[in-house]
Length: 205
Ligand code: HEM
Image (cartoon, rainbow, N blue to C red; front, side, top):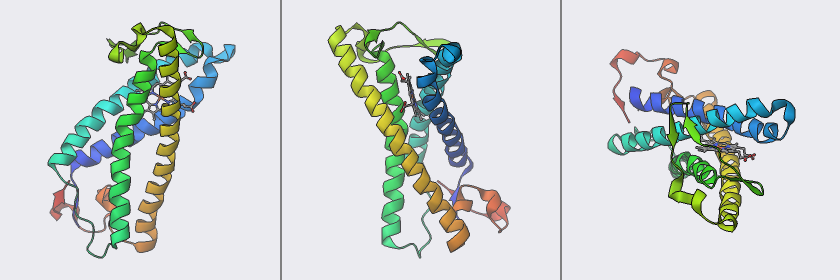
């Protein structure tokens, strides 16, 4: 069996875990900020959400560079053309979302505008340093800031919903291969699932 190498596997699971955590935090914190009982916790959670999201952006750029230098292992020869197309389309869309989703959040907070009022809330990456606002959006006039905040937040929400949809398809496809087709596609990302002797396997990707 040809599998992904350790770096590609580490990127995959680390980024997947961070994104899943951030989807949960994102959904909880927006409403929690408007509720006086959970306002303080929500404000802290915003910083965690932003720090995790920016880490996903940085890790995704590294992962994309790695992927360009180390192509993914070839699919098994029996894979039909429609499935080859579906796999490469899904993977391309995943990369676009891994970059576009955090970027839309970063653009949104760069406007320093929420709802119908300006705000002054720096983004502190895990409390270590302040992250700059993109394109000096916070210095635009109020009408422009409000419009950009509205558009980028909407994009952030739509992209996160598309992400979930894609995630469900991706997980379903992985389980179909493992449980129904009984091939090694899932084991390429989880080598422990492989029944073959792992120490002698070639790796790639
Ligand atoms: C892995 C990357 C990310 C994921 C999966 C993610 C996901 C989400 C989700 C699901 C929501 C709730 C949307 C809704 O209410 O329908 C949200 C809200 C939000 N996200 Fe992200 N996000 C990510 C990255 C970022 C980044 C990098 C920033 C900023 C630097 C950011 C800033 C925000 C803010 C401020 C909100 C709340 C908007 C509000 O209620 O005012 N996000 N995010």
